[in-house]
Length: 320
Length: 320
Image (tube, rainbow over all chains, first blue to last red; front, top):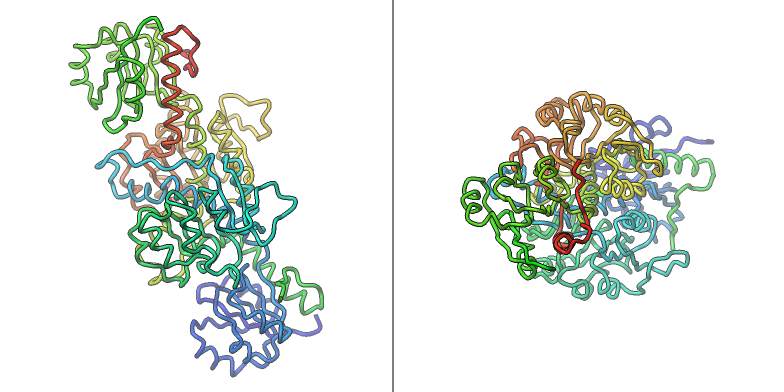
């Protein structure tokens, strides 16, 4: 590399998994400010020379933040989703953006299946039942719901959705999907809209990107179509569901239940969900395991090195 | 059918799922005594004419119980396992025995995978974390362990074990097995003993029958071979594991963790397990869902009808 560009790492305090490797390769500034005010003070001292940002977590990278970084040329996201980055502004400024590509896809797909079985077979409730000593006191535990034969509609048949489908096939699930467009080489039934996907399935699994077209794509109408035995599994973003309506639908039995790994205002979760029997909740855990983080760290470094050696990026995000 | 034989249904109080259908087809006596003393009083009044027993649950059918039923010709078990039945005595008396065949296999296989993902990805702990409000208070949740790439050793590659293997393949797991004998048509690596199965895998899944050869087949030596990152998933019987040693191994970190659906003295569970982070516990839930119970009910009825019409049994148990 001709130069050693300054890299700003923007991350939550505990997410230090890239620090060492990055520091061995680039001069690095690390911030873990959770609000933008102290961050901007910090930036005012160093910002003019920052050439790349490594974005870990979902701190907002908006036009204002970007305006403090006049030399910025590259944003490397360790997430797949880039809804926290102002992509149009990046495009305008000519800032390249990369994401985690498919590094997490297996983990998310594994988790989607895990959440689905956990919900159907009531595994978290079972664990509580035994650990609280209720089994010996209260007797038999209520049986769960059979997975084999369930019709599963996948919303977003990208890399994660395809891996979920592949995993669910040997369970005897019948797979269909909705996606931005029908995929010619895919044998699964395609539904051109989400209402008919919901109406014709027992389970819908959300794993599409969050953007203006998909925000609240699962609204009241979709949930009514899914029906009172229908199940939502969300391993995408919280904003894919109209959360307020979903809470009502879960409380009133408009839908049967949900396994939710994402929420609209994380780490905030609607408290009405806490006491419900028909939900399994999880704190945005689908996305990663330490095994995948290794891959992501390598991918982020490879993107940085490629960019500053004028090589093609490994996992570029298209800026429309 | 030439006659209408009296059928005795021995079941726990809440397990009434066969009552209606059976009563429509046979004269039925129902008992749900949990101890043998009142049962024997009951039997003394009716027992001489009982031609078949439908055994639901795991009430012991031993030589003493059988001695009160001189006309008994058939025992229909709604379980797959028949370790609660004195099979040698049945053989001596010429009593035929049937079991649930493969009616539950899918449910058990689904549950084994669910327990494994629940353990690795910490889904029950995640559910507790969110529902108790800790996410908003305490921040990020500890990441779980990756499933893809794990080496999984299946102990007992019968109908359930084969379905587990088939389900785990698309997760990128590497499957091997130990069974009473090597299966020629199976592509998975065979280990002739359990110690080497444990030594060469990250996870062992127990789904073999419990009998004199398999009781405590997972002993201290096997657990030491599995090692401190090794995981046990038990969807078979509790007696397959030396439970006392397992508790020690879990507490001392000799093994990494366990997902346990079966215990030696159900519904008793060693209290030492209740507080452990590295276990997911469940109250013998793998075995069934209402969907499968329908199959079992039909199978039990078909066995009864076949037997008393001198037709071959549908799911006979071999009496060695």
